[in-house]
Structure formats: structure tokens, C-alpha cells
Image (cartoon, rainbow, N blue to C red; front, side):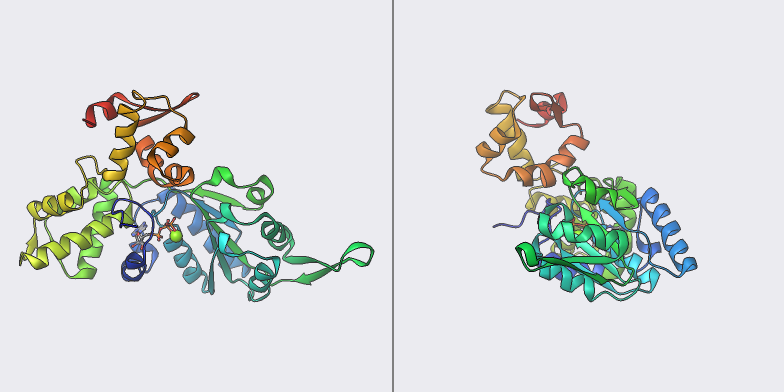
Length: 327
Ligand SMILES: Nc1ncnc2c1ncn2[C@@H]1O[C@H](COP(=O)(O)OP(=O)(O)OP(=O)(O)O)[C@@H](O)[C@H]1O
Ligand SMILES: [Mg+2]
């Protein structure tokens, strides 16, 4: 698979380099003020009560800072963070092992919690509510439930699709915090901090241009910043100016609205195959040869937010803006 620069999704190169650019404390975590205000209160209260922080659900498109925030929360609580991916836990025994390993006030972060297996999810209900593990032992008439007490812990669930969470699970989170796409001004602050961390000199115009073409997503802004840095390095430019950014963006195939080739392919297919829609998501996915869930979770949110794509009762349709943008 080729690297999709504009996708908020994580690839292995990102994973390595992201560690370096991750905010190390709350002052480096830019924006999302509503989320941060809630977290600040919950962390302070937990510290004063000397008990585990309440469970919290973080939702929003990829690359907006859910994992980074979970790391900061654990650090602020002085607790150990355990990171697991929802779909990777396949058996009841696996989640039981994770839960019984938690120490008092530890933080368990479950990524992609909407994709957890239902049998695994059911174990979480009593674990979250009563810090208790209910396990069925044996079968038929001789079956009995065994209960194991757990250490009071905090569950932080992260999801790109909070709508897909079951009600029993959703209800067990005390707070539901939703991440929004970042305004260019906020991305510019993140870019400035990261340019310092990377030891590069970024002109004001260059910074704003990257911010405007990063799809409201810090992960993408960081990815573009690294490419621009490479470009400047190879071309022996000392300060990164607008022209280096333009050249790098054009190499990366990112257009004036921050869309990449896959975004444009979606809009182009809708315009030319489906006369601008409305078209059902299944038909669109089949024509594009792309997974329906990926379209909904990765590509669509930003296209909707920018008013390029519209949701109608009969499917997705292009807006005037999209029709004019796509040739
Ligand atoms: N508010 C922020 N301030 C500064 N940097 C941020 C912020 N949010 C995200 N970043 C940067 O973006 C990168 C990606 O963020 P993160 O991995 O936390 O996203 P995510 O929401 O967990 O994504 P996913 O849904 O793909 O797991 C981080 O490594 C960090 O450098
Ligand atoms: Mg994450």
C-alpha cells in the first residue's frame, strides 16, 4: 500500500517519529479546550479524592490527539498507562489478563473500542461498574460464576465512530468527549512548537500554508512538516519559505483545499459517475474499490466538515463547492 500523506491514519514511519513530537505536558497540547477543561477537572478531582479517575470516552477522526491525551492524563495522575487495541483482544481470557494486571488507579486505554468483540465487551460491563470480573466456569448444570475483585482503575476508550458503540458500553463512561478538527491557527501553534523540536526555521507564511493544508489534523501537519524539512535539507535552504512548502505539497499531491488524490478521487467519481449524487455509501465504496468503513471513518468526516460532501436521506451528494473544485 502506498503512503497516504493526507490520511490521518498511522503508518510505521509515523509511529517512530510521532513519539518525538507527541506533547509531553498539557501546555504542549494545543486546542480542544472543551475536552481539556473537562479532563483538567476530572484529573484534579481524582487526585483530591485519591481514587481512580472516572471512565472517559474520547471520540473523533484519526490523528486529532486521542492517544496523546490519554498519555498526558496518565502522567498527570501519576499512574501507569496500559495501551491495548480493541479488535486485537480476541478472547475473554485476554481481557481478563489485562484487567487483573491493573494496579489501583492505573489507566487502561482501549483504542478503536467500537471494534471490540462483543464477548470481550461484556466482560467490561462489570469491570467498569463494580471493578469486578464475572467469569463463567464450566458448562451446563455444573456451570458457576466466579467473581474476582479488580483494582479500581480508569478506562479511557478511544473511537473514531462513537455512533457504533453499544448502549451498555456507552452508558458506563462518565464523560463523552468529542475531538473537533483543528483551526489553522491552532495547527500553526503546533507546527511552531514542532519546528523548534526538530531544529528547523519556518517562516510565518510557510507555517500558515502548512496549517491551512493539513485537513485540520495535527498528524497530517506533522507529516507535511517532515516532508518540507526533507525538501529544504536536500535543497540546502536555511529557512523554510513558502516556495519550499508549495513544492513539497505539490510533490505530495496535496491541493489548495488540503485534499489528496484519494479525496479528489471520491469527489471525481461522484461528479462523473453519479452526476453529483445522491449515491449510497455501498455503491460509492464498490466503485472506488475501497472499504465502506474506511470511507466513513477516514475520508468522509473532513469532506463533510468542509461542506464538500453533503449527507442526504438518499445518500451522499456533492455540494456546489465540490462541483466547482473538481474538474
Ligand atoms: N492537541 C495537540 N497538540 C499538539 N500535538 C498534537 C495534538 N494532537 C495531536 N498532536 C500530534 O499529532 C500526533 C497524532 O496524535 P494522536 O496519535 O494522539 O492521534 P489519535 O487521535 O490517537 O489518532 P488515531 O485515531 O489514529 O489513534 C501526535 O503524535 C502529536 O504529535
Ligand atoms: Mg491513537
